Image (cartoon, rainbow over all chains, first blue to last red; front, top):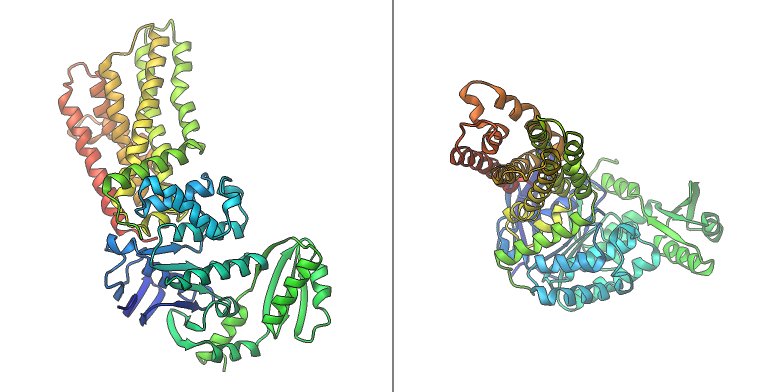
Length: 307
Length: 229
């Protein structure tokens, strides 16, 4: 049975188009939704999570409308893109409440929450309030909230945005483990290299439409022709810059307040070298992002806008 | 994989979640301070023969402020901060969010107002508040909380301000009109319940208040079904 079937599915927010006429079937595994900010990824994920109702067409999850069917939502785990959670609670309280609301019996909800927090590497911080968490810790806590009730289908909206390189590797590993035990996972990102580390099965979405589906390699070739920007917010941006300055794949290095922005033609190598520099010089990285201008340029090219 | 929880379980989880969050937030303490402000008035009016009437008037204003601050902020912030996505992506019917929050917060609102009222009256008049007035304020607080739910779901961003504005300006204004229109004013009906109008019966204003509150609750439930996160 297909997990998701979208049939001529469109969503408008007033006069603004969210997604347009999407027909798509998801049968299982890990699928990456790739597209720049505002492309329609979050709209697709929210429709699958039952938070939005399609304006036109249909979208079903396990054969039912997630917006209308309470039953099917017990099979879905959703980690939203936005950071805000119930910040007054501790991580354990938050995930326990999410598990209980998803139907885990009250007496088992605490244990389920501990298990989920353990899975995402948050056991040590589980009794701290979420308010004081870094972005990476919030991402992990949201992931724990999504998996605590052991759902079949996981929707992860930009789960790697803003997390430091070590945490990124760790979270990717943990998401892979979830797929290995048979979960169907949809993960969105505007960074190809994040998704590529998880799956080769991608759906490219741009301006609300599915541009391409399936093989990651062709889109990667296109993206590699454009310099890829990586922004690192840390306490020693100049140390990272000097570690990369003589690398031939680096096209440009610029400094912003408390951050260094690197433009590279070999993102994989660049990420590895940033990681090495961070570990070698004990650099405290607060945010690592990849602005999506480069991906937008590629999509403009794909749709003919860049010709 | 978890089963779909029963409605009772869902509501009790939502009530406990709401209470836990509320106790760690500022709104409840702000409300407590507002609700206890008539106590100071009671002390100041100890020798005043009009103490009872003045405290009653102020307590109606307190009721119009405390319920929106507590209830409207809880619902409005949940929608505005998009934390409602954590609820609506779970196997919960949407109405449970509103009913769960009301079950958690309306009793708190009622208790806070009743405590403030009784202490103020005890200090201001050196006598216990008549039970009818205590019941009147309890019903009034419940009704205003329910009205607030409707407003908060219609305009989450400005839920508190609009709820307070609606009650203090529109509802209060309608209640002052001599015509039959004032029958739809909750504050007017509460004043009848309190016995401000000596000829007033108890049943009719109580029923009218419940009907008005029911309409607002229906608006809230209708709106929450349509809202998207």
